[in-house]
Image 1 (cartoon, rainbow, N blue to C red):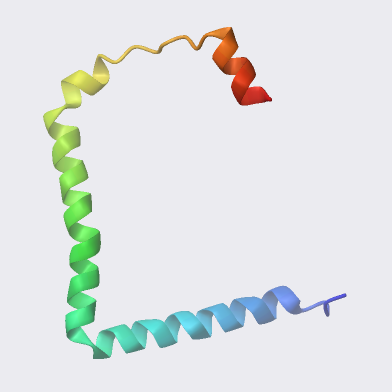
Image 2 (cartoon, rainbow, N blue to C red):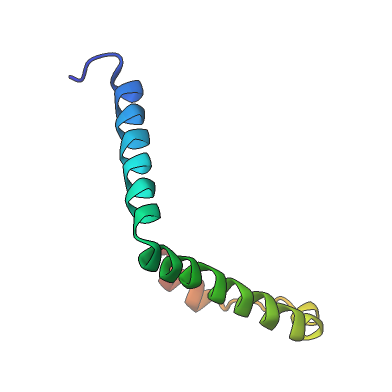
Length: 75
């Protein structure tokens, strides 16, 4: 059985590792830039697609799932 303060210990280890990772990323500017682009570009593309197809998204109606399909998913 784990000791009583294990959640606090796990959180402190997680915070330490997060800070260490951010510090390492910040020192390697090229890696930081590529990771930032890896987050920003897909987010902007998703936003653009959402804006362009906003009317089509609003007009999507809910569809009913046949009982056979429902049964296959449930089992």
